[in-house]
Image (cartoon, rainbow, N blue to C red; front, side, top):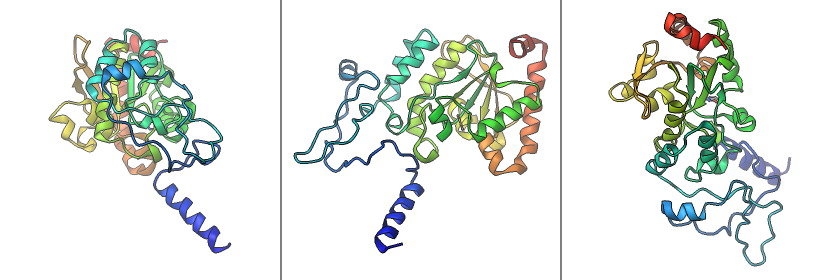
Length: 292
Ligand code: URA
């Protein structure tokens, strides 16, 4: 290998380590001449200027620069705050309008690097809702939550207590894949949370299974949200969701991705699954959760 090749390989390795593990375009795009980032946009401006999904807006061209081989698939995000997300979510009266509103929401920069929105999977009238952290690479490609290795373990975990994923509603705190599978930031979580709250309010589940620290911290209120997942797991907690008359019971447990890395934690996860099964089998919930 020549020195030049080695330099290129090292540059690629660096990109990989920093999370650039997916090719978004077929051909490289020279971003050195891209326009300066736009100034923050007000909600009113956004409403009047937001382009439709896959609008295919072409980036500005520098004189003499070769045109990119493919136009950008989407317009770049325009930062928004949780209050704006909450307003949009509150207007959605059905899961379909919520999904459409999220798909056209340009306020979260994760949308720029994700392939697509990963909205949810499973029944609209599920009694049990399972909440994860954020899509990974396979979920990003498939547009469905929990279809990669962690999802396959989740399926086996549910199967071990006689449940099938189709009996549950599955969603994530953050519906766009963070680059390189990094943990979503607090700002990203706060921005996406109103959409998840709205989905929970529309589904009206009898109970929630919160997979991992991010889901538990995002949905629980203080002081519980400040406890680690090892302290929280295995005990039913109560979550208040706007639009629901009563609190929803929620069982935090370890994330299946963590269990794949830390098999010794499976014994505790099994105890959590038994608690979930006991809850499912209690007379109040059985009909709503286990019959389809
Ligand atoms: N991990 C998650 O938290 N969610 C998914 O959908 C996949 C992996």
